[in-house]
Amino acid sequence: MMPFNHMKDYLTRQEALSFAVLALVLLVLLPLSLDVMRLNQVGKYLSFAFVAVGLVLCWGYGGILSLGQGIFYGLGGYAMAMYLKLEASSPQNTLIQTTPGIPDFMDWNRITELPWFWEPFYSLTFAIIAIVVLPSIVAYLIGVAMFKRRVGGVYFAIITQSIAAILTILIIGQQGLTGGINGITDLRTLKGWDIHTDVANYVFYFLCVFLLFVCLLIAQFIKKSKTGRILIAMRGQEDRVRFSGYDIANFKTFVFVVGAAFSGIGGAMFTLQEGFMSPSFVGVVPSIEMVIFCAVGGRLSLVGAVYGALLVNIAKTTFGETFPELWLFAMGLIFIGIVLGLPNGLAGVYSTWLAPKVDEMLNRLLGHEKQNQEIYTSIPIVKQGVVS
Amino acid sequence: MTEGSNTDFLLAVEGLTVSFDGFKAVNNLSFYVDENEIRVIIGPNGAGKTTVLDLICGRTKSTDGSIRFKNKEITRLKEHEIVKVGVGRKFQNPSVYSDLTVFENLEISYPKGRSVFGSLGFKRTETVINKIQEIAGRIYLSDQLDVQADLLSHGQKQWLEIGMLLIQEPQLLMLDEPVAGMSVSERQQTALLLKEIAKQQTMIVIEHDMQFVAEIADKVTVLHQGQILAEGSPEKVKSDPKVIEVYLGH
Image 1: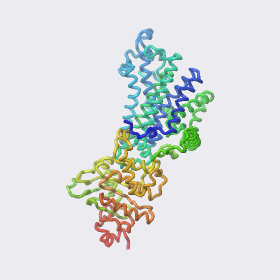
Image 2 (image 1 turned 180 degrees about the horizontal axis):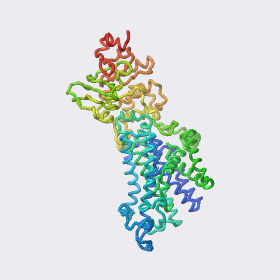
Image 3 (image 1 turned 90 degrees about the vertical axis):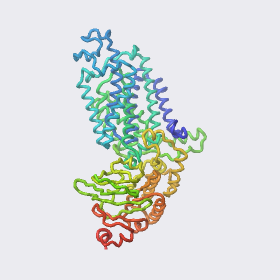
Image 4 (image 1 turned 180 degrees about the vertical axis):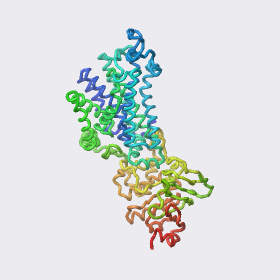
């Protein structure tokens, strides 16, 4: 049963509008105006939107700044890549290797037997489950270890960042087991179906948009339930929430796990659309970039996070291709600028300047005198400062 | 570890000690609180008043001694478990959720759906709304339910936090300086509110304002250097030479 009395408790008119506009942009506008190669690129950008949406819940709502979302993005992406790699490494495809039937990079590293943890990835079902469950388990363990001990704020950010760094080093160091710095490349088919055709690109793009909306709707549910309000409460007055009878660590762990699961799905969608996965999407820099997507979009806006991921990635591609050395500086400046100048990101700009006008227009269009005010519900605002 | 004894008291604190790096902020403290009593704790700065409340509600863990609530040992329970057995705590600086409305502030304190999944499925039913409106009436905030808590005056924030305790329906409320920063008329309203609460619930209040103390207290405990200096009715305590010496002044 839904814990909401009215539909508008789940989705206000403005929110419904923003979801509809996003759906229109992603499902109609972009597919009709872009060629398949560009659309595939947008699909890859959208895979980061999963992470950004998770960060809205964790960071925007819960005040938990994780600088290690790349861990979960990577786990999801690698789970997908391992399945595809095994399918691409059938004995017929790998006849020229010393040991046929194992991934090429293992053969190059003189490994003669498939490592045990690769075995289950022959199964697509297992891989799909692992995409969500593996990041969730890791997030759960980190969450329990940190939050039960009341580690939070900057310390939590630093620890997640270190874990991201450790995972990268581990992947690169264990070249024979993981593909090392090159990652897992040369992925070809999914159940015998070529993943590089135009049709496949379209299918993956729409699958990606569909899954993104599933995540958005789940996130919206959490945001509008009492859990969402507890997260906001926790962000400012952790002790008050604790002394109202809540076990804070459980709520933090929950929202961190949700964010991780979303990230895992995003990573898997990246692997499918890009055709490879590498440690360059796991480490510290990509993890920080993910936080920037969220900040640019507005860390309290789910839909904003999607636009943030799209816009920053577009900027990265256009600007970054021309001035690759300058890009990281530009990125840093964007982040500082947003945190100082627009703590609510692009979504904040919309809700302050445009939303009232849109509301007025809608009222005139629908013939309402004025919109029924959402009773007893606040519009959350973010104060300045990154870690609250 | 000292074992507490069985008593008829609502709260029995026995031999309570906490030491921070050798400094005993609370030293072998024992006191008992009856049901429906308003107990006021006074004492000079650093006497350990707030620490005692922190110890009872589990925010600080004691070094030795026993805290029993309704004859149940709560000394080792976690904060949220202590809340669940019926102890509520108001902090010295009003702690309200400034980003949320008064209604939402009270709703979060409503004692249902306190687990993660319970809160996901929590529904704003008629019962919940009625309860919140009832409490808002008692804390003089009926017409402020839609207001964001940030925008309330200091005194109103104090009331809101008291309301957040009331809605939890604790048997024991612990209030740390509930009238700090209030105007004279707000103080009077608060005194009324506390007396009203005392009809059904028990309270431990920390307060400095002796006039206010005399108005509300059934019994006063004077703390000094982590120990009890005097205990008794407000009149008796006020005229106690030791209390005058260390706290009230001549």
